[in-house]
Image 1 (cartoon, helix red, strand yellow):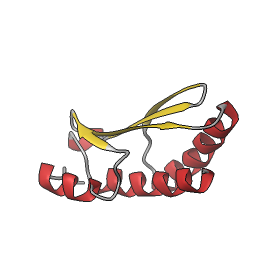
Image 2 (cartoon, rainbow, N blue to C red):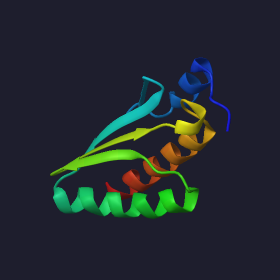
Image 3 (cartoon, rainbow, N blue to C red):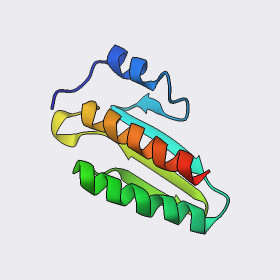
Image 4 (tube, one colour):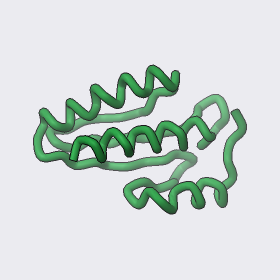
Length: 96
């Protein structure tokens, strides 16, 4: 996959204010009511990642879930990252 331009990435992020582009990655931090909700979202996201064959760098601390998306082979953000970001957003919105 081809790395997206800064302008293309910023345009895609307009509808996703919880995400930001920095250091050739898309990043976000979600906060849930408790650990169970955070872990439940992570589990659902993990299945989606497998379906996309694309996996985030992520960490969890109690009710917080930090996610970073990049396509290492392309050296930055590709459409794969955008597509996974959209899928993750849908999952998190369903958790609310």
